[in-house]
Amino acid sequence: MTQQPQWGISLSKYFILPQRVILAIMGFLAILNAYTMRVCLSQAITVLVKKKNSTDEDGNDQAICEPDDLDGDSGSASSGDFEWSEEVQGLILSAFYIGYIVTHVPGGLLAEKFGGKWTLGLGILSTAVFTMLTPLAIDYGGSDWLIVTRVLMGLGEGTTFPALSVLLAAWVPANERGKLGALVLGGGQVGTIMGNLLSGVFLESYHWSFVFYFFGGLGVVWFVIFVFLCFSDPSSHPFIKPSEREYLVKEIGTIGRNESLPPTPWKAILTNLPMFALVSAQIGHDWGFYIMVTDLPKYMSDVLQFSIKANGLYSSLPYIMMWIVSVGSGFVADWMIRRGIMNTTNTRKVMTGLAAFGPAIFMVGASYAGCDRVLVVVLFTICMGLMGAYYAGMKLSPLDMSPNYAGTLMAITNGIGAITGVITPYLVGVMTPNASLLEWRTVFWVAFGVLFVTAIVYSIWASGEVQPFNGAVIEPTTLDFEAHERKPELKLKSMEHSS
Image (tube, rainbow, N blue to C red):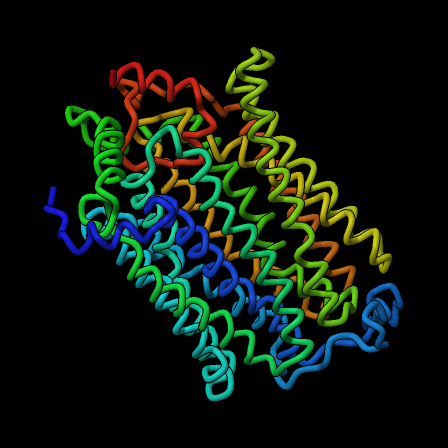
């Protein structure tokens, strides 16, 4: 452990909040910034392209809705300057995830080798820079340069969650992991809400390029503050209070992985039947989630003909409900397990089934609500709200199945699931060439099938029990801190073992 400088000890007296809380706040803002930069294009693209304000070739008047007047004007979102087909728009929206997949696993390795501070910071900074370069890419290179820019943004943002996992493992004691972990992870939902809501406001009032300059600029500001305030671990922090430094070194030093554990048992993991069930559920979740997070603003603009500001508002409502349910379902799942109402396996299956079958039904139902805007928004909000139950279901299965290798299981499932982020936006573009209600209904039926089939596979073969490849029940150094907090019985066992 390095010696703390005297100037750092003196400076530490001016900080009211503990440094681990400051790190958690900056981690929250990191995810928030990452999501706003990721989703703002989904709103901006609705004003970049020329709108298809026509019915289908047969003149069927149910294929398009009349423009709304919810903002006091009779027009919907203004028509843009670019004649990008729906297929090209799908490729643009999916391009981000091509880069995102590539740096997911390397991001964790870099964070473990060089520290989470610079892996996270430089990743967000690069994403912010390319976000601010997006208007330039669009003006001078059209869709081709925009696709390249989005891939580069994904490369930068792909390191976010792996780096944060390493940082929080180094900074957050087990008895504080719940509240600080919840704070950090909340940045994803809040970022999606803010990205949709503020983009709608900005696009209504300013030129579309302002959206990218604003969110990219916030990312740069975050980087400057983060680099000054945060460090990779308590031992290297120069102006942490000595008392907090000693406390963290003592507490986190008791949370260590057994060095005698064998290397990651890849063959056993990849041939494990519950692992296949977990991957299946992850594919279903991400298929439905990425359709909604990437293309919901387009549906509300192209089909429902919402105005720009209304689009931003109503596209954000489902994620408010999703955040509420994701938090509440975790408490319910813990209560069910503690009271012996259901065992861990059945609790995970029930929550995953609720998060798959419910959204599938309400998603399709929204397409049959036609142009009833209030009913459509309500159905989509319920759809995404129920999807929040995944966080008390299959999202926790990696820790249930293997506390020692939970990080590896998470990397496998998240990596495979993120491929749907590439497939679904492009597939939506191919399936909706005329952006009609009938075409979108087919999109939702396909999502219905994927959600149902993958959830059935999970319900049959998933397990909440520790798998044979895990070995001794010993906590890993780097783990899914949200999942860990949902497993109080494992925490108690690990604390008893360490004592």
